[in-house]
Length: 233
View 1 (cartoon, helix red, strand yellow):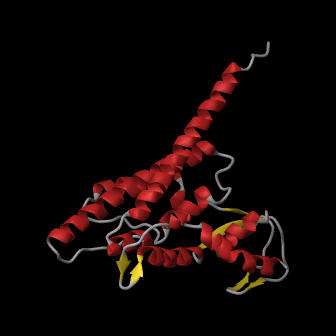
View 2 (cartoon, rainbow, N blue to C red):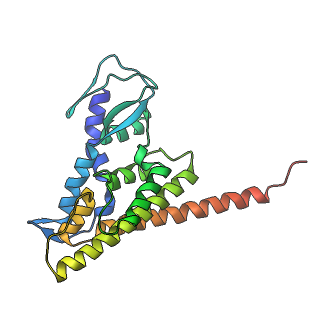
View 3 (cartoon, rainbow, N blue to C red):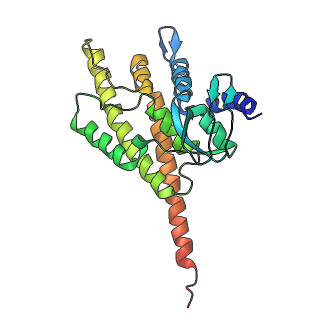
């Protein structure tokens, strides 16, 4: 039964991930930006992530796209992102935040990006889609909003630096067409470069900023409420 539920829910999960790409219209090789980004999205959903299941199964879970498991309660296991999101929705696991999304690693990538203005720092191919899923679709940061806000800030800084590099590259390419090294661009960034449209990156940055401001307001309200409570003797 669990396998069939996963199969039925796959399309719904796919529609939610990377919703920030909606509205793009420029075409590239007969495909518009939205179609290209949708292809990136489905590839990102196949990226394997670690989960910590809260159940055990003697047999692998059989789904259309393959078999996963068997699972052991509280023992980390790898599954595709789409399966991880659905299993979490069913309260059958917790997602394990990837190492590269931890604060120190994000700082390293940001600083390395700043120090190398002529090249891109190596990042996971689908880092934007994965970050979006962990930050905005999963419960990975529910219990630590301060950590979530810090992660979003660092991620925004990283994406902004890389966006500026793409913008500079587009300007040079349009005024003086020549070869340009696109090594280590992520899937979304490469799609934006190919279609000469930064819509998806801008929308993603806007979402990060809106979430950050909302969390700051929520934190300020909580502090104000705490300070207004009568102190016990």
